[in-house]
Amino acid sequence: MSQPCIFCEIVAGRAPASIVHADALTLAFVDLRQFHPGHVLVIPRAHLNDVRDLDDATGAALMAATSRITSAVSLAFPNHGLSLWHSIGPGGHQEVPHLHIHVHPRLIGDGFLRVYPGALPTSTQAQRDEYASRIRAALT
Image 1 (cartoon, rainbow, N blue to C red):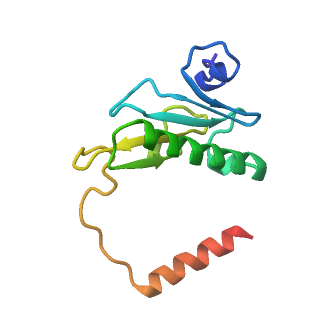
Image 2 (cartoon, rainbow, N blue to C red):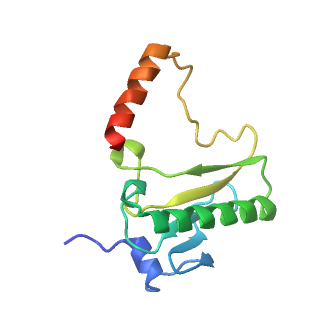
């Protein structure tokens, strides 16, 4: 038997959390892990694995809540900027299989969340056009 989703347990009030925002479709709470003070998670109340499962109304509510929380974290905690991120699946290092967006204060030179492991090669216009074509085809 699999364990219950910890985020669903928080939504249901069966697990403790330091709630900073709640509305009909979303919830935001302080993450257990704090690299810098102010790390908050914003989630849909409904159990959705990741952003690919969002319906339009929940997606709009999630982005509105994320925007409000990001502004509040920016004002409440020292930072030189912020990072927002959402991981999908094991390749993306998703730890909890319930859609969540991290809002994390950043400081210059903190070394947190390095996006690229090093310099990346530049793609050609032909490659980018081909990638765009593949994505457009998948949208229909």
